[in-house]
Amino acid sequence: MTYKSHSRATSDLKAHLVLTTKYRRKVITAPMLQRLREICFDLCQRWGCELLEVNGEEDHLHLLFGFYPQMQLSKFVNNLKTVSSIYIRKEFPEQVKRFYRDKPIFWHSTYFIATCGGITVEQLKQYVQQQDSPTDDEVMERDSSRPRRRSGRGGDSHS
Image 1 (cartoon, one colour):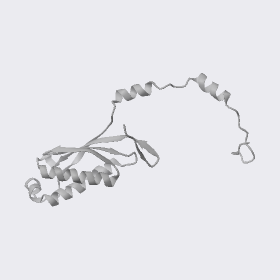
Image 2 (tube, helix red, strand yellow; image 1 turned 90 degrees about the horizontal axis):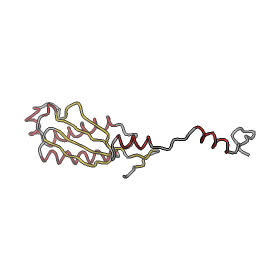
Image 3 (tube, rainbow, N blue to C red; image 1 turned 180 degrees about the vertical axis):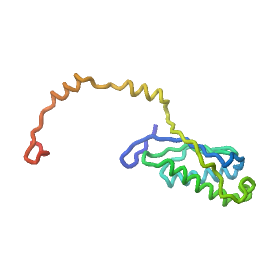
Image 4 (tube, rainbow, N blue to C red; image 1 turned 90 degrees about the vertical axis):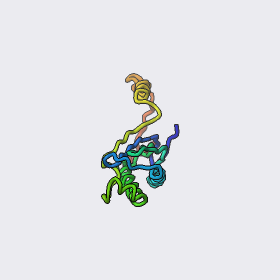
């Protein structure tokens, strides 16, 4: 498992994103899919996330990507949809017009996103449950064996 350090957090966050075409029209061709892969790769780099996999069919696109905790997923997804739609409509105008005429649309307004990881929720629950929780006796014993510190005039200084 590879953890990513970013700012003050270390994480391993991954998401599965599914975008569907407007009205689920079967508009995506093989060249379009290849171009969508390139666009997704470029945008992930700009956003500081890692594109792990991208593929799709004629009416939808799947992305698997790693992201950092401070990333606003909804803004990333909306940017990805906007930018990819602009490029696809500009670079494949005849194919897109067959399905959407001159309307400036490509993706459906909704999307599916789910976080995912290397283990199941059940495995993670078991791991958390198996932690060696301290007992009240251990906490009291530890506190009583600690030396007391005296405060100096400043209140926070130690002698």
